[in-house]
Structures are given as structure tokens and as C-alpha cells.
Length: 361
Image: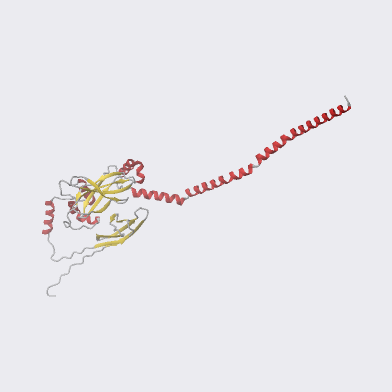
């Protein structure tokens, strides 16, 4: 090999060796950079991820904790329980708890424009109504329906009065006498589904002026029970109601609707009874009046009182010779508010010895 060829061969060999060393150095450094890149890729997002994940759990935990504190607050729980119990009390119109109890409602005529409904409902009937209405029971409310009966015995609803627990009688005003009516007590749901508990006897209001007004209070019914029984069809053989007679006799513990002969005999006995030549009879009546919120329910000693559109009410009643307490209770239309006023009244009548004056004095 000549000199110039030998120099070229040596240069070529050196270049090959340098290129191999450079390739080896590049191969050695490449994995180190990749691992570093991977480490930086994995480590960089971690703080952001941790910061994003840390906020929501803390906020959700705070909300759940506040909800648990609110639900477990004894005052809140007690208020919810009291409201629920109050609604159930207003819905429960039962008064009888015995096994052989009989559901019944009696309708009585007070005068040409007033009817008086009185009912007795057992607790078992309330349970049956609850089962019959099923999912509708939650929105059901007790009502008193007044049905008008025409000559063909067809009935239609003319009034629907919402009643409540603790009351067992109601006064109903009617118009355009004479007309025939029947009362039905039961439960009606928000969807309109009605479950009847008991139906009353049928009564007919008299012509205006055919009878004197009777004060709207149970204490007065005791003195006029025979007359009210007659007005309510008690002397009509076709429309007589055995339940009405039984209810009145149980209420006042005496026979109702005695035969005419017995009544005339008592009148004759009183006429022939020796009476003093000079008499002085004194009696006392009491008028209770007041005002409450429009649409409220008012009871006097448990008996309902008619409340006018402006919230005013008035009751006229006899005052017997003794001490009595008359609780007057007003309940709001929704039943959530109640106000009570108790009147303590005492009548003490003394009859003095008679005094006779000689004609010479």
C-alpha cells in the first residue's frame, strides 16, 4: 500500500471509531432522560390532583354534619312530633272505644232555618276508614255532608262542613223551608274520594212561623226534647227514626215521645194541683258573645257555636242555680292555633219567707 492510501485508511478508521463512541454515549444518556421525564410527568400533576380532591369531601362532610345536627335537634324533633299528633287528634272524631259500639248520627229540627246533627263514632270505624282510603288517608279530613232529599227520594249534597276531633254535634243553617234533609258523616280526601261512616234519619223543616225558635244550645234541648223530637219526625209513623229516639233517651235518661194520653194526664194533674194565690217566679238567662278570627271554629262547653263572617258569635242559654265553668275554645281553620277562655259563673238564688200584710195595715 502506498503512503497516501495508508493515510486514507487510518483516517477512515478514526472516523468510524469516533462515530461508534458518539452512538454509545447517546444510547447511554437516552434512558436517563426518559426516566427523568417520566418522573417529572408523574410528580407534577400530583399536587394539583390532591388540591382538587381535598376541597369537595370537606364541603360535603360539612353539609352532612349540618343536616345531622338539624335533624337531631331535640326542639325540631319535638315540634314535628307535636304537629303530627295535633293533626291526628283533629282527624280522629271517634268517641266510643267499646267493642259493641254502634256508629250513628241523628239529625234534629230546631226551627225552620236550623238543624242539629249529633253523632257517635267508634274507634274501630276510624280504623276501617283508614284501611278503605289507603293512600288517600294522608290527605283525608272529617266532614259532615248535608243532603237535600226531594220527593223522589233522590239525594244531592248541598253543604260539606269540615269538622274536627273533640266535637260530636253541629248546628247547620238551611234556607227556603220547608225542605227535607239527611246528614252523612265521613272522610273526604284531597282527590275527592268519600268514605261514609254513618247516615242520619230524614227530617223536614217546617213552614216559617209554624214553630218558635229554640235557643241553639244543648242545655235548652233538655227542656224542649219532646218538641224537638216531634219536629224531627218523631210523631210521623212513616218517617219515625228509632235511632233518634234511642239517642235522645240515652242522652237525657228519660222516655221520649210519650203517648198523648200520658201527656194529658200530667197536664190535668198540674191543673188540679193546689197552687198558692200569689206567686213570684224568677229565672235567669245568660248571653255569651265575643269575636275571633274569621273562619275559626268556636265551642262553648264542647258544643259548637255559630261564627259569623266577621268573626262575631253570640249564644243565649239558661243559667241554672249552681256554680259552673264554661270553657270557650276557638280553633283556627287549619287547626294549628287554639285560644281558650274559661268563664266561672255562679247563680245563688234564695227564696225568702212570704210576708202577708193585714188589710188594716
